[in-house]
Amino acid sequence: MTKKTFAVIGVGRFGLALIEELINLGADVLVIDRNIEKIDKVAKLVTNAICLDSTDVDALREIGIANYDTVVVATGINVDNSIMTTLILKDLGIKDVYVKVQSEYHSRVVEKLGVDQDHLIWPEQSTGRRIAKILVSGNFLEFIELDQQYSFVTVTATKKVIGKHLLELEIRSRFGVNIVAVRRNEKIMIPSSTTPFETNDEVLLVGSNANIEKFIQWLNK
Image 1: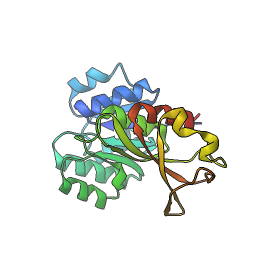
Image 2: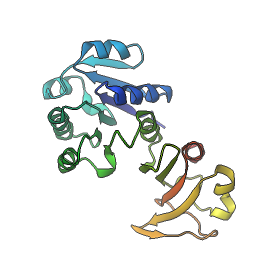
Image 3: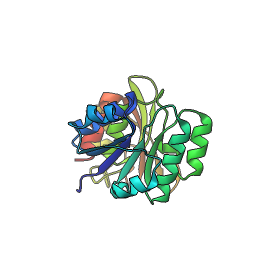
Image 4: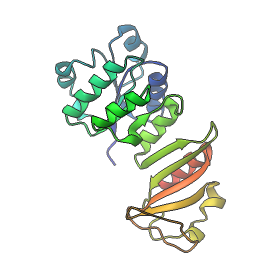
């Protein structure tokens, strides 16, 4: 499997936590910020760190931002810059764009620019480190922190479970997570213990963050 590449725009508290965890997970990361001191802070950690204005379309095009699989707009409280950066990224054809949003207005605007609702990051609800795990995993579809210890997530079924059922897999006893539903062909169903998982199934589960991470690691092996 080809390693995904990431670009993170903005090195605030959230952005830095995200960058550090992406690096810990072995990802290739480009970091962009207009503040040279922040760039110097992370330059030794990442694949590439560049000081530039993310609202400068020519500068972003020149560094090849469109070649990255996923771009995270993690800029600070300047909503206008975040919106302009997002607009440029979408105009450059980048499909997988995540945006840290500051308000309901901010979220509505970037959604209209083509950012999926599940790609909006509310910093008071999500930590940079946990978002990094979601991005690297690749098969997370939805992630909701219920509190600091428990989360509700939706993941895509992989070959580890396709064709097998809950009784056979023993997911609850092995991993301590509960499968609450399966979305199949855009319909929600409650799987019985003998209902086999199918290709493209979206599996909805709940559990502690530690147990979910353990299950996801197994699911992706």
